[in-house]
Picture 1 (cartoon, rainbow, N blue to C red):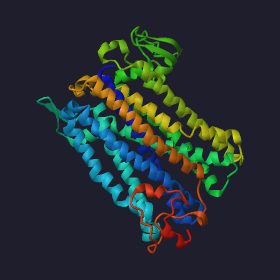
Picture 2 (picture 1 turned 90 degrees about the vertical axis):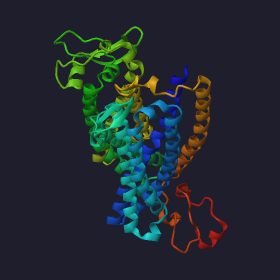
Picture 3 (picture 1 turned 60 degrees about the vertical axis):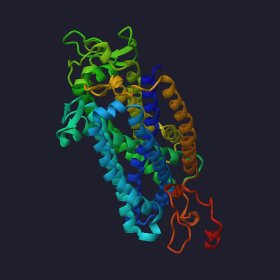
Length: 478
């Protein structure tokens, strides 16, 4: 392995951790808005119990997302300085806009959201929850605008070997941006719904069928039923956009090496093993004409083949062929789970069917796995370009680094990330295993103005009920 490949692996490793936590914060923030709105409207205790329960998980995910994002951003200057030099006039301002709008909005209201329910009153507290949720969506908008521009760049000129923006609206609203933003936000909602549903299933399988737990499962299945089919439609539209602007990526995803004779249509390869050296897909199982129908929405439509591109311009079909199928397969399982939930709901067995609950529990990490598989598909499928058609990945890396230097930092990242984020994930799973606490057993974070407890960091909101009591608080009878 050379320094370039190790730098790519390092960035892929760090972003794999980072993308999970913001996806959860996007989904959980919106879920918390819904829960608090329902509680304000109905005053049903189950909603506020769920709000306090998932607020703790949100605090853990938010904290780990911030840390992983900072570490990831530094690599633009360390391992990818030529990319920053070439495209920094576009990617730099876009990331700055995210900080000035989304991050400041989240930071301004996060403390009130986590600790202020008894201090500011329900109405203003709901506004704070809503502001944080909007902040997560604005953050996703700017990040996806920057990343989408790297896939479908426009609104710029190249002067003295550097990109110069000439039309910011064209830069932001580049051709792939709307599809990628909608696809990513919906994926975040699906991942959150699956985690919520899986948590409820875990407690129901253990006989803990309290109203909050049943409400969790019901809401998760409704969200899954609504969002999973929408995601399939968005994925189809994104595929059409990819066919137009990144045909080599689509050919690699399909393992499509040669055009069939005119009029035969493109088959859909369900399974196989693309061999990049032999320029063929081995052991393939094809469905005639289905590729044309799905990819072009016509019976005999054609798509470019990999052999039409120079070997140095071809993405690694072996990887993206399978990451794409993992994503699609998990998506189909999500739709199946949603339909099973609807059928059981109609027969009043949603909370009692143990095979269904086991299915929901097994699918709880599927949303995050699908996000990772989809992210690998779109980013590895962009290769060998960092900015598609403008800057090759080999030219984007910092040339001074040696293989040993990058290997050492990669090893350091692996050790530290698994220690830090492994501990954070374990703590989050511990919170999920405890389940929502009834009001009489719950110490709401940031109680009345007379209490001495003053949390100073977001993770304070994730403190488990009854854990870590300060001695001077004991007289309050918590």
